[in-house]
Length: 215
Image 1 (cartoon, rainbow, N blue to C red):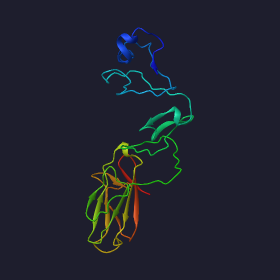
Image 2 (image 1 turned 45 degrees about the vertical axis):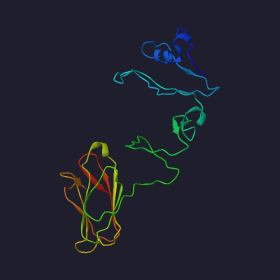
Image 3 (image 1 turned 60 degrees about the horizontal axis):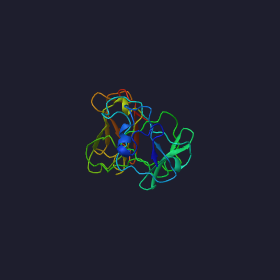
Image 4 (image 1 turned 180 degrees about the vertical axis):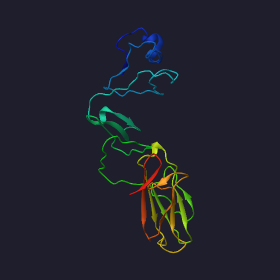
């Protein structure tokens, strides 16, 4: 059941819609409580903050201290969830996909496999894209140049792996060349490097300043 414990002035005269509209900056003393003894439904969106989405209004969504899926957010009839599993720990029992970047400020542990983005095999010159990680290259038809992305602070720590999958990189005229973008550097030098051994791979990590280091 949805109810307000501080006032009944809106009651049945205005209905629940008016009560929900009243909660916020105009009536900061009011809170919206959800009683979990029965299913509750909100046929629409729930926005926290001011109505224009432009003012920094202190607003938060707080859940009970339960450490199981019953005390979190359920999506799609409970098929996916997000909840507090322990102190300072947020968990989902399903899959979690990040469409943008994710930054870890502490240690990271993986209890299962780590899947990297293994791209399409490149047979011609190619500029590394923002979503690339493992770049397989087949240079059997001729030398291939892979150009790394321009360095930005946001890319610090990003990994790019270039791998010879064609087994031809050692042959004359069939090297795989990895080039920095513009004035960027590879291992401190503004110059390209060649993968000239069959089936070899190079791993590059962005320093976030001026280039990429080979590790």
